[in-house]
View 1 (cartoon, one colour):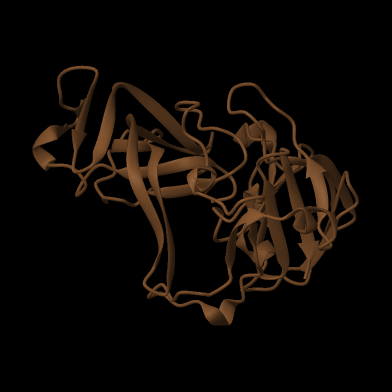
View 2: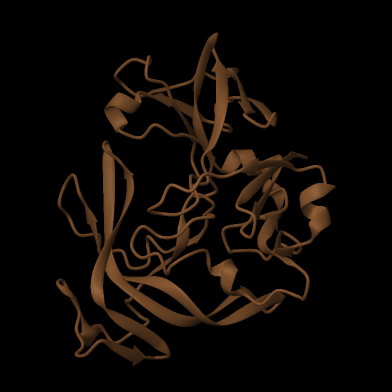
Length: 293
């Protein structure tokens, strides 16, 4: 998830169920280690969504060894800070989500978790080869190479960057702002044009938004509405990167929302962006690179 920072994972099936209650994970002392996972005393919450639909995770700072990939290719880190949650609540309804691991997130954004600043992108903690810059590069996500069974795709993710990746591989680099709490934000200033309207604001290119993109327009009607098929949308960032797409009935689905209703002023471009564009995050120099494929 390029739109959030830090890994969150459900405690269920990782530690004994007897330790988990609706009020928290039960243990004594400042910390405990179970199944190789060290849990630190003190609860935190994380929020996802906006005013129209908000979900909260309740959990703890924890440390665990972590391996990503499968038998075709993988890499490991010995001690990664994560957010270990024990409960998920729909704020609007007050209902507890009983679907275990439904909100597990591998957040690779450039900042730190709002729950605890010790939690950041897990990719920061993987050992890079000597001379590489902390960060990652994501190749284009071709639809035909993925399946519901989780097909391994070689050369999709590159952990660790060379200086050439940043300077001479065609990426447009975007310096990021440090917002204090949460650290460096992945939001990029841009202008969005659609249906003879122009909107300025911050945009987020987010693999964690899988179904549609969202344009926040403070002059839009109070209700949320989808753009009709065959609508052209053009995004131009403050550093001159341009991304243009046309909506259809099944791809590049885009909704227009009013931030005065949602209380979220970011325009978010979801997974369809990554089908035709490359993405780079340079953690060391606090910048994001975008490239048309």
